[in-house]
Length: 536
Image (cartoon, rainbow, N blue to C red; front, side, top):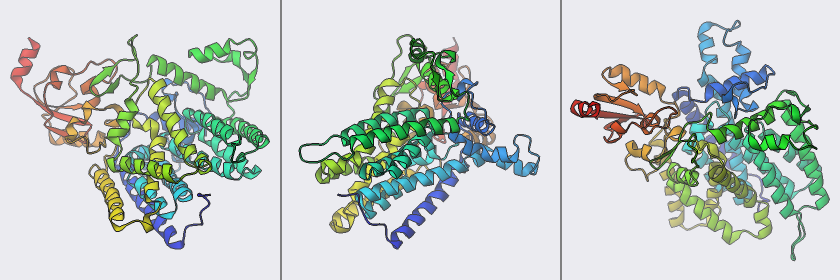
C-alpha cells in the first residue's frame, strides 16, 4: 500500500527546516507589515475573555470567534493589558499591539506547513512533500490570512491535523489512534464553529471503510467504528467544555435564547426541550448567532462579485453560487491550479480504491464539502479566507505532480521547477501586501475591484500605507461623502458600495483609477467641470 513510506532522510529534514525557517521570516514580515484588520480586535478580545474564563458572546461580533484566539490574547493577559503593572509603557505598547498578538498565528501557520509536509510525504514521498512545503511558503492566501490574529488560519490547521490522525486510525484502527483522532477532531472545533462539518465527513468515510467489497475486506470493523464514534463523542463534549470554560454546561434546551429558526424549531421539540445539554452554553449560542446573522445580514456587509452587488437586507437576496469558485480561480496562483490538476491526474492513474479511501478521499471530501457548504448554503460570502482549508488541501494534492520527480525526464523536471518559480515570482510581486493578491488573469491590478472586494482586497490591512500617502499628499481626499473634484482616494469596498448604509459611488465609477495605494485603495483624478454637472 502506498502511504507506508520510510522516514525522511537527514538531508530532507535539513531541507524542511530551511523551508520552515524561510517561511517563518516571510510570515513574520507580512504579519508586521499589516495594520489591524477589521475583525482582529474582536477575535483577540474574545480570546481575552476565554483566558478570564468568560465565554459568553454578549457582543454580536463575537458570533464566529473561537477559543483558540486565547493564544493570540495570552501575551496581553500576562502583561496585564490594557493597564499593565509589570512592564514598562514602551514595552506595553509592543506586547499589547495586534502585531504582537499575531505571533501565535505565525507559529500555527508554520505547524500547518509541517502537516502539509507530512500529508504529502505519506501520500507521495519526499520530493512531493518538499514541493508541497515550498508551495505553502509561497501561498499568498495562507500567508496573508494565516498570520492574522483571528481564527481563519487555525481552522485550516485544525482540518489538516484532525484528518491526518483520522487517516492514521483508518490504516491502524487501534485504541491509541482512535483517541488521537477523536482528540484532534475535538480540538479542531475550538478553531471555528464550522469545523463541526468534519464529523459528517469522518462519519461518511467511516461508513465506507467499514463496508467490505467483493474483492476486499472492510478497512475498519463495525464494532471498531462504533467504538470510535463513542470515543469521538466523549472527546467532543470534554474538549468543548474545557475550551469554553464549562460555560453553563447542562443547561436545559428550553432555557436557551435562540434567534435562528433551525434551533428555535429544535427547541420546541417536546422530548428534547427539557433535556440538559452537555455542551457549554456559548457553543450553541455561537452556532445560533452564526445562523441568525447569516440569514439576516446583521454583522456583514453587502456581497459583491464580478461587478454585481447584492444586499442581504433585500427580501429577494440570494448568495452567489459561484463566489468561491471565482475567488479560487483569481486568487490562487495559476501554477498551483495547474499542478493541482496534474496531481488529480496522477491520483487517477496510480491509486487503488483502498489507497484512495484512506488517502486523498479524506482530504478531497473535506475540501469539497466545505466548498459546497459555503458556496450553496452560506449567504455571508466574505472572502477566500473562509475556505483556507480548501487552499491547503489544494497544495497537498498539487504535490502529487512531484511524486516521481527523481525518475522524471529532464524536460518534465524543468517544467515542474518553472511552475514553482512562477508561483514564487507571482507571490513576491505582491509581497508583503498579500491580502489583495490576484493571479495573472488580472493584468491591471487597479481593476481587481471589478472581480472581488471585501477581505479579498481591503481588509483594513493598509491603514499605515494610506496614512503615509495622505501625509505626503495633503490635497488628496479620502472616501468623500459627496462628489468631490481633484484627487480622490477611495477604498474599493466603499467604491462599489459594499459597506452597509452606502450606495456605490456611481459618480466615481465612470472614471479609471490613475494609481493605487496598496491595491485596496484607488486614486482617481476628477475634473471640476464634471462635479459641477453632477451637482446640478
